[in-house]
Image (tube, rainbow over all chains, first blue to last red; front, top):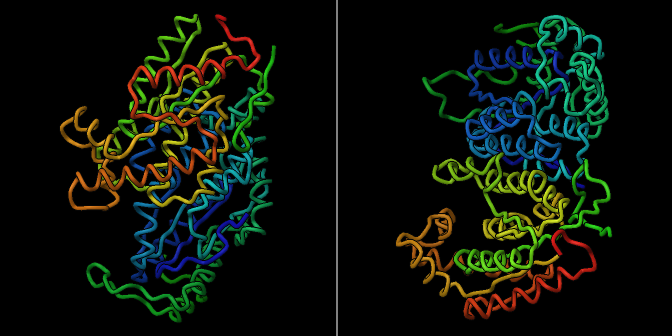
Length: 250
Length: 237
């Protein structure tokens, strides 16, 4: 089925990051955001599972272990739809750079691992526009596992994929679950046009590559004339040069 | 005796070849079509026949029932979010209430099922294919009864129920008309068109909702009797 095949018609740009827990994607997106803001671009950031309307219900249901694969998928689709309709879309329409920490690919990977039909999940999210840039922070399983299990031993039930019945040990369940998620991401990356970045490298090197790719994508982008406080927008050419210099503003 | 159930699409991941002994009967119709009255009469009759009955409806899930009610009081709710919330509500009820009851041999009466949610979404511009696939998790009922009434009849009944016409039941979010009376009639007419199409598509049993309560009940009962005689054992019979 057709899934996010055509580019969106809005003046803004949508940049999203995906990857396993512990892949470092949120750190990278935060650094990118700081850099874009320093350049004077209008930036809007949103993250997975953060809708003011929905997230309370999701949290309660997770705590009560009341979710099945189908309702787990649907309530996350509600959260996404609310943020999409009230936040992401209006900002894209207004010409913002919209940064999303996780997008529909997270649902595709997780829900399919939980047993949902891939076409059904794709359809549920079928209203979402294709991102202008989608980064997949890819690291060998052991690396991301070490980053999570090394520093944060208390794993939540769904985070560890305990609902899949893979193992009674949360850490072992998390390992198996993340392995299955990674398989999904790896198979989605090509067909969905995700830009795969090697997440085993240093934060700085990854950020440099990310900024260069973003600068190139921003060729032809024009920020709307509404920047609060009259923030000055750097021309894309200067941006590209700054990225090539290996930094710009941290 | 076992029976087979089917889903409209892919169904539910953890449910394989269900053979539950219960029955699922949906009563559909637009706002103020007299559904709840008929559901109550049918429930009473079924229980007199010694059948255990469970009544479900919209916005009755533990997961998002209250959330939907609250969200509809506010001003931020987008159309896609509303669609997905109703789908979540129906899926949660299906898995946590309807299926356990069917397994135990209950007659489940759905006072509105997926079709009401679909009709409302279609009136708001949702794509029919999107909805059809979204509701692929839904169990196909044994019988869908559609109480058909005119928008004028329903407007009269709606005003008798409450002096203020409901915002959503008047389709005020669609901006069809500046005043609520005109908007209600227009929106209910729009719903009618979609219900009629769904009736054809899904094979509803259409009952004239303008007849007397008793006459409607008799018609409903005879359809239900046939559905119950589907050759399977029910608890209590």
